[in-house]
Every structure is written in C-alpha cells, then in structure tokens.
Length: 199
Image (tube, rainbow, N blue to C red; front, top):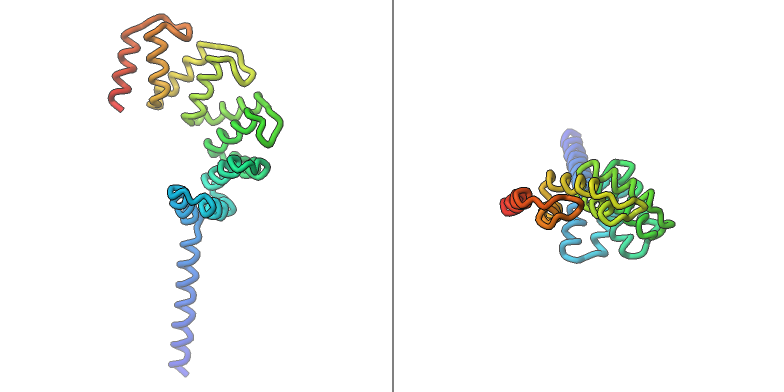
C-alpha cells in the first residue's frame, strides 16, 4: 500500500511539474517571443497566431503588433479593436498606429483631430515616430493644424534630445539654410552634425 501511495504521489508530482512548465511556456511573453521569431522569418501566418495568443492574454505589445498586421491585411475593424486595447494600457506604439488609421480614414471616418490628439499623447511619452510626425505636421500645416515653425522646431528639438537621427539631421539643415523661421547659424548646425557623427 505504501509503495502504491508513493507511485501515486510521484505520478501527481510529475503532472503538477508538467502543468507548471506548460503554464510557464504559455505566458504572453513566451507567445510574443515565438511571434517575433516567426515575423523575423517572414512567417506572417504563424506570427499572427502567436501575437493573437499573447494579445488575448493582455500583452499590449502583442496587441499592437497584431493590430498592425491586421491593418495591413485590410482587417481594419479588428485592427482598431486591438489598437484600442493597447491604447487603454498606455502603449505608445498603439497610440501611433491608431492615429495613423484616423489620419488615413482606414476602417474609421477620417478624423484629423483624433489623429492629432493620439500622436500628441504618444509624442509626449517620448515616442520618436510621433515626435517626427508632429514636427512635420507643424512644418507643413497638416492634421488640421496651421503651419507653426516655432512648434515644428520645438518638436524637432524634442527629437534631438531623444537622439533621433532624423530630427538631428532636419534641425541641422534648418540652421544651415535658415529654414523654419530660424536664422542661419553655422555653429548650431555644426554642433548638431557632431552629435550625429557620435551616434
């Protein structure tokens, strides 16, 4: 009887270990890693499958990446849902992706105000693509905003502070040529170019 009990206990301990291992392997992070590996191999079908599993477990990065792939597959309604779930968690890439959909009118009526607000929220969190978007928005007068060179320069400076190559290059050119309402300033242009060469 003792031997039978020890076999029984050993069996259940092995089952519990297997369940623990399976649970550990089925974490959102594990699914995300599988998805990223599949995506890097251009295996989009499996990437979407693993992103979906991680997204369903509440992983904001997976929700955003799944939304991006769905958006590019013209599955706009579902893409919007996943972007919104990640936005609700404050994930900056999701703000950007959702903003792009509103700016283009993909799956939703085109809404420059909504797009601008989403870009602004992401940019305020240091999201580089959103910072670039706002700099261009104010330089060209887009998304319902007037041309405002002072704000364009402020956003370029935010990009420079974040060590963004594009922002550094653009602001250096503005100082070199006297663009965006700036006076030509070779010293500032040179300092920015030096910052670029250190990258």
